[in-house]
Image: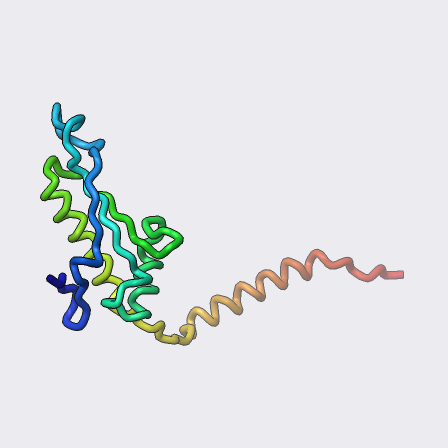
Length: 141
């Protein structure tokens, strides 16, 4: 089954690898017995579901959560149950991919305002005057 990210991007569930580890979070007496934390792994570089530009943006967005091999590792341990942690990790992955799927808006070039140009030139005049006063005056004989 595929996980829908956007209208044209969906990830196959077989591309996502989950493993369960013991959680350091809440859980009372169960915390030492049950593996409720979820470690979700998604190989961005080998994923056929993602276009190349989205994959590159995703790896940049993931930051420290991506390994040298291009695998995103998300650990979810906020909740006490394995199911809620699984859902949390999956939601976070979907949100990350969705954010990477929206291309950045290009920078719009702007011109400095007339007032800002005048302020800059005024500042230069003041600085010039200060430095001009430091110059040694020619000696009068």
